[in-house]
Image (cartoon, rainbow, N blue to C red):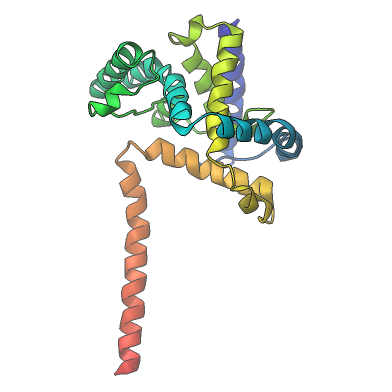
Length: 258
């Protein structure tokens, strides 16, 4: 069943990617060809699900579960990402990072009590998440169109395919449906908690839908480059431009004084 879903998503992704490439979008941009549908889903997610479910449940979670307990739960959830991180690094021949992911999973699953304690991080081996979506990106596969998914929120066709592939790895492939949904729910609580109290920023924006879309695109680009030296290359021209502008302004100011 999962393989069928993967092939369906792969077919849709290929079609969308070709359409985006034809429009001349760069690799890390996302077109929005189904914006009317995305907006309807966004309204449902934000005005219904978030108001009546996500926000009150997350607030109760924060009120009743101590900070260290929430961190332990978050560690437990993310520990299951280490095997897919290992494989995704391995297919890119990133042997060092693949071994580190295997080490983290082994140590945290045993000495870390199934991952509730991040023992590996205390030993100097920090978490470095690598998704199959990022692997596709490094193989020059574009993001594809922007998607607003019911319940799940912002995504892209590339990320959708990547999530399906990541779910085929051990141990995700052995999870039952309710186990998968439980982990997704716990991860969703952590993500919703991270933006509690920031609702005014969204409400004060001229177009909340555009605000969320642009923020998501920037965030995905940052995650893609966060472990890549290209982030320095992408930031350097901006820094250089600011420096040149500052020097020009300074020269003009000195000329006026003289």
